[in-house]
Length: 621
Image (cartoon, rainbow, N blue to C red; front, side, top):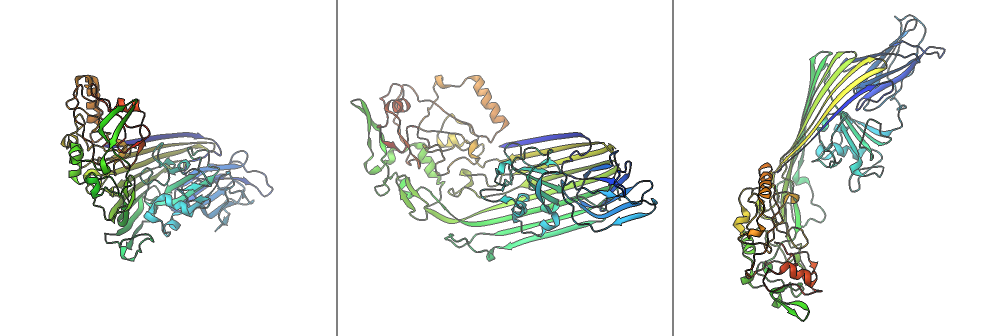
């Protein structure tokens, strides 16, 4: 199976004064003289102290200025006009998606003179109605963020709750928006913050700042009815920087959970390590950044699941007298106006009546052996297997970024992030082999890229073009792929691609027994509704055959539905499956039962009205 989802977004904006800049900070304010009169045409220069990138503009006729598209960091602002002393303010910290206001009053004097302001207090957000919290990357690096997932930073944000997922002021988790450098970080339509397989979990140490908008999200963010999580990545500077970290947890120091019955004898490993590096390519012009992070975890845990017991393998479904009655379909007869059947004595199905398909399934021994009696119910024992099970998670995250300044009015940056999932996760616990359960390793690759180009034409005309790219590729090749297991089990007319899916009467898997693929991709096969060979009347058309062949060619591991008809007019003996369904449904009416179980030209069959049939009128193996 290969599932690929790609999302591409292009944002092209021509902005006027006080427009928004996605994922970046802005600086606004006004310039006046000592009498309060506005100063038009004053030169405003904003300098990033780390990269020496500069942004230049002039005040308008109303004395106002606006400088957008500023990355997070420390800045210096200088303002000068003829007849006034030069104003310089340092220690200015700009943060993600903020628009602080700095109003300046110039003093009369020579332009060679200057008034310098240092070490200002944090600026207030006065230009928007939004509320939220900002966390600096340096702070987050020191916090115990489990598995270093980006979304777990939300646990430290005010206004967030963690009951059945992450919620901003009570809103739906799925409604939380998530952007990385102004580009969506979720898989379109189905992705939600908290799902590490459908959202980008970039290197936590690569993030410069995190901001969670709880109310009043800015207009430039869509799909954020439940709040907006915005992150911006670090970039390079004129100095070289680097870091390396390894977080290791010794499994012997971890205590068992309160209800764990068995000591942890399996392997336990927990490594969280990563490294970052950055520096200049050309001083004051071009910079690079690279980050890597890996989460490697092997786990061992006590699991309690349900499996068939030895009595069920032998056809004994009495369960100490508690078992629901199973009726012999070969005793079906018309009693007056009512169809009726006789139950098997002591709920014991003779081995001679076992379906050959069921016998072959039992011989595969797919289920683990029960460890205890469990709790006996009319449908069989539950929670009768307790054992130590393993699993594992492996995520590798790569990030790279380039920043370049052509001039004071023209800047560009590009970033690419890749997340490689190679996780075993938690395989199906009831089954003995990977052949019958989920694929152990399901490769999943997630890519996220952004390219942003901003150009200032004039103090009132600014253009930003931002291209975003998302791609999610999920590949899974079952161990049973191409082995024609349906034929090996004696089920004709079914694709040879995957292992058949065995379902109970309720539509669920029979003790989780099925193909090594996602349940949504499984075929639905019923040995009780088959023919061998297929009658001419049920042969699909050539066009249907071609469609089936094309589907098989395009997505080989995908399983296909198979449904065949009863043969006519022969009346073969119908052996039945040795194991009843764990879930039961009420028997249909006599007429409906007759239509479903009677081969053409054979005596009618059906379930007695008002009784419960463990196999169901549409029992599936």
